[in-house]
Length: 291
Image (cartoon, rainbow, N blue to C red; front, side, top):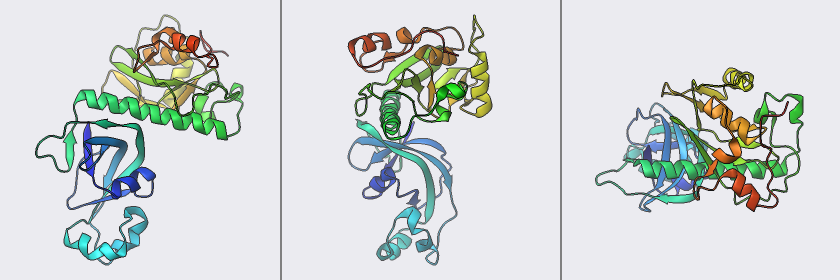
């Protein structure tokens, strides 16, 4: 994973969602997910997708795009003089739940190559932050009837039912690894289980039963699951709420799986079953997905 070094106040504006163009003095061919590093802090503070590098702006049209790059008019001469004219387009920028320290490699100025341990920690904290936003949204939006179309799951809207689980602001993130796949998820405020965007699933497993095949096929048709660069894997392109942790695990594994015992806290190793047993108000539906 690459880390992109950005100074304040620009990184704060990116994480706040008000700045989507990071202005640089050269073009870049880098695309995809990047970690966001606050310059001089030694910390990764967020993530984003670097999706495009646009043609250079000129002094004549620079301020026409001020809503995207957030650079004020009084800095125009400075940015043009320094050659900060190439827009690097960012999307889906989010702060991490907790900043992650990293070792800044000597000579790294724009991008830093992050080691696998830091990259894993970033994915976990990113998943935790997404989980908190997901559950928070479910408390402020009206419940929707998931039983009308059980194949669509989270695409139908936020988790329905009672939001008494008390997980907002302290959402545990659980991980399930099956062969080369690695998925992250959170128990939903209802009895379901949300697998988080960016998780991977086994492309071709060895299912004993075919009860989850229709759901897997639907997820592929709808684009929730998409082929990964690794030919062994599929990747979740969005958060998706399953009716149970077992249903989620079966899709990740492409085979039979007992979700409550297989989903483990990425920090403590506690199984979802044990976590729920120790959390009086948390409930989950185990076993096969309900029709």
